[in-house]
Image (cartoon, rainbow, N blue to C red; front, side):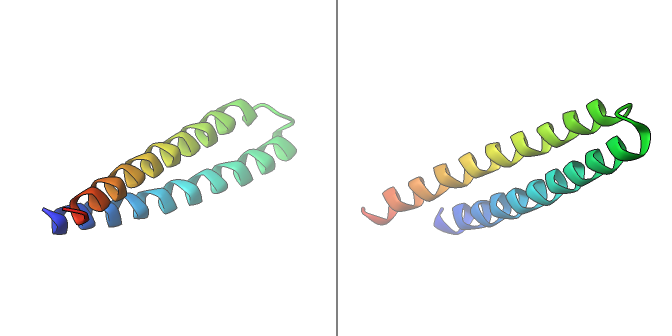
Length: 76
């Protein structure tokens, strides 16, 4: 059980990093899109940035829950 939880924790942490990087890339693209097109694509890129950051928050929450479960299992 602990091994499965550790694997899930590592996967959740990888997804956190991937979501963070994708959110930062979307942020940079929205900045460049705003400069180049005068704000036409900005809304689309901001929505993508928001989705990536919300995904990051979900994966961080999942990682915290897994750590809490591991701690509870470790005390028994």
